[in-house]
Length: 167
Image (cartoon, rainbow, N blue to C red; front, side):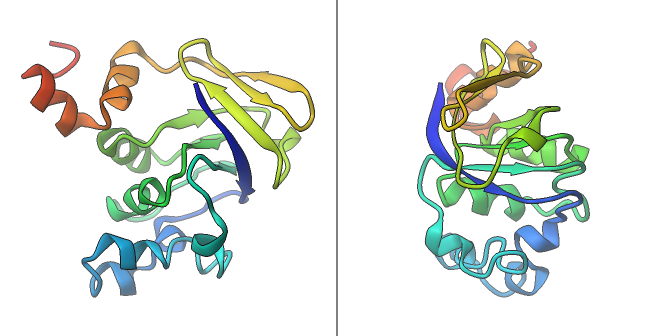
């Protein structure tokens, strides 16, 4: 179970440059410092307001753009429990899973508002909106993906088990 956590809501087509601008990715290697700039184009004080356990909720095509792995990495570093969106750019989705950041596709994000408090059960496939007392069904993640996320990412999974989850 993830959460409870507060919702930070964004729209469609949030690209990796909005998540972490390339000008920082190339010049800042310290993850604490880099994370201070997460989402600043869309919400300048995001990194100061977000708390460990919070959720990002967004529209379609979250994480489009370049393949920069720093995009999901800064969100995870800030303590985001999961990104919940109508859909994800495939490279962002894969990078998020690889570093252990849960990404959940949910058709009902229009019912979720900024500031709502959510809980997520990835195994059972639901998002619970405690603020509105509503539950939204989501397609459970494949067991192999859940295993990777539970271990904190692909590298941690392989180090612990000595294999990939589908082997």
